[in-house]
Length: 445
Image 1 (cartoon, rainbow, N blue to C red):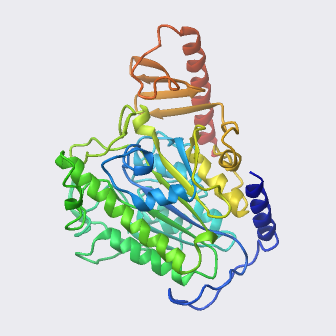
Image 2 (image 1 turned 60 degrees about the horizontal axis):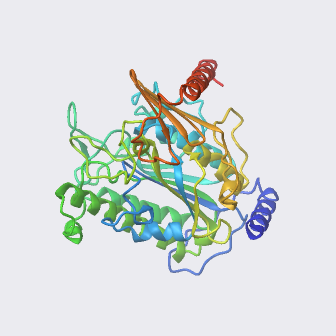
Image 3 (image 1 turned 135 degrees about the vertical axis):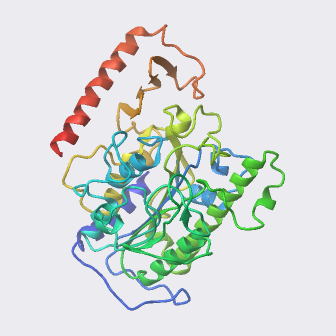
């Protein structure tokens, strides 16, 4: 605990002394010896998996999927066992990660994030960080709400839904269309495996910006459908009996290998101890006709549900020498907490607007620190849920379920009839929260 406090104080002292400094220097290749950082501010690499379940990583208990590089991140950092997203689908979940604000309903993919939102990229860019996004955006299609309008200096990827990894076409629903963009312009690289494009662009970006602080957001489109792993990867999982699970596992493996390449580039450039890495999933595994194969482990539910399997996801934070290594934290936390936590670790000022997130540094520093909030809320279509302590009330239409998650993380035993007093308090609390968040949205706060 004391070593964490000292390291963080030393870091923040260096940051505050140089908050206005923006460093630049010529391009340096991977083979060059490490150059000293000019301003002391750590880099941030945020890796977001797509449709990855709680039971799809070795460090979270999977026995059939191999994820050595992600497991190494957990060994070199802190792993959360009760990390929740705000929504069980892509767009509102991603918006909450990037803004520190709770999005869970009423978000239209073609409209996207309001231009008034302040993203992680805008927060870091305001103090001189170079920013880039390579991967899947899914927070608005028009350029006015695209990555380059939300703080990213560089963008190469696609803007919504799913995309074939080789043709880069969207084939599902409506007219087939080519989906790849570089910046705001259509971009073609036919036949090249898209995750390899993400790695190539990421390593180039790291090398070009190795002597200045950067924020690199990597929302991989894996293991989301289409389940396309490189030829030969599926053979590695021939021991997996279910063909769909075998195909899914090979995609997780492919993503893990490419994450390893990005971490290796940081190491080769002498930046690993100078870089905070965040790894998470946007929500639980898909059971869609076109997808499937993922696992929520012992949890109930999947993508597009408010059961634990839809909203409780893997999350790892790693910063060697500052964040405690090989630690597990069981306190319930939320995706909105990522932004204020990164602001605290880097010394970057928070956006001047209402935030739902909380700084997780105290929790990361201590297994017995209190959870950052007493109560958690969700809304999705005709579902809503609220959790207070171990108690979670989930309501789908006219069906209500009360669970004690300490005793029943798989949400099998409904205690609704036995605890009507508690149910009413949770119902009232959720109603007040829903009105408050709606009022804030309406007023633009």
